[in-house]
Image 1 (cartoon, rainbow, N blue to C red):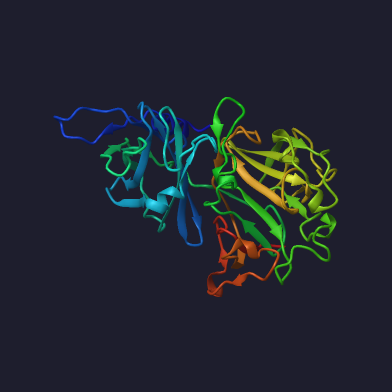
Image 2 (spheres, rainbow, N blue to C red):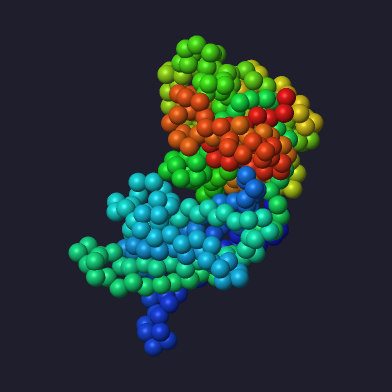
Length: 385
């Protein structure tokens, strides 16, 4: 792990929050604010995006309801401001289902605010600060409760750029399935399996192959082998070393027969590549028996390492791809990544249309070729053949 990321994370964990009250007022305990992983920006469709989480731990003996979250840059510019429904859509208990009252963090409880920032290239902050307005949420006293405010210290943004990789697949069309707002999407799922709570899929993309009409399969889409993605070559995204894999987990013959899988088996068949500098490329749901590499083997960018399959958890055959800070499927933090080149064909504004109808074509065809970027959410793209 790079030292500046470790130090930035420790700085985030050490944040202290005191109430913004006059000097003569009594201090109160409220939230411990922390950002365990330093944010890193990644280019997407001509903009820079940054995904990270603000943790709120309630150290008071009363339930607290956050009312507003402001994100300020080191220049004092307000980078984000969430309240009301916008805040409710981003605030969730760290462990789903543990808080009975929506929008309220119980005494001793732990909430997480999922934040995304967008800004023009070269206009990003070097550090971030957070301000939180909240009230005590005692039953029967919500409407007239006093509003208090706290602020956390500076969080240094990771200055290193996102790693730029080669394509994990050939051709297309491929739908790049990702939505930061999905309550149980990759970006919002914590695991605590190896001594720390992490979000491996913070930037993960599920790649689903389509035909020109937006269909997922040739014929009966319930038959796994009919899927356009099934059996497609999966490529090494860089010169790297194979550090972990599985090749023998079975897959269902029909999509409708893919039942529940244990947590340790949800990835199905997989390959993990060490990219160096504490980064690891993770490929999941590969076809059983298709993995062509072995632990310790060196691969070159573009080498075929396996095939797209339907092993493990999933709703259709696809390739799950992400980059993480450790060679672990669940016990690692997801890191941003970009691809060195792809062509954008369009996007699905409504994800429910995937497999049911064509995507919306890109309006500006002159900017369809993207370089050193992460695909936009639910975009449809083509990798070089």
